[in-house]
Length: 121
Image (cartoon, rainbow, N blue to C red):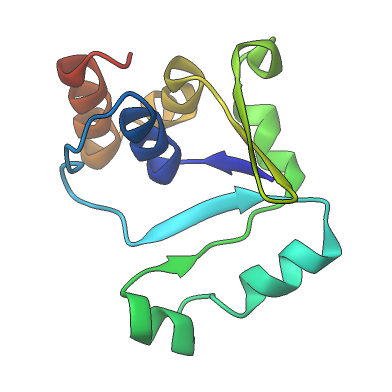
């Protein structure tokens, strides 16, 4: 599974032992997967699901085509961790921020400032 978006930024912060909330917190996790089993689990946690009502956040499963939004070579800069039987790939903060900064929405700029302030980008 590849984790992208705001949750990926938070993953990098946590991986460095930082517990700093994002400005304009996101209430979703954006994974990309080619695993049918994982995709079915994600579908059970989509917006409006019982999972969201219980946990306060939801899964926004994305197509693999979104990975084309990252700069060339992103896979070589990505972090990889194994959790049980799942390998999670998390693009580097600079790569996560690239499509956000192209969008140039206030929330995305705030996330880039946050990443710079805590030293992950």
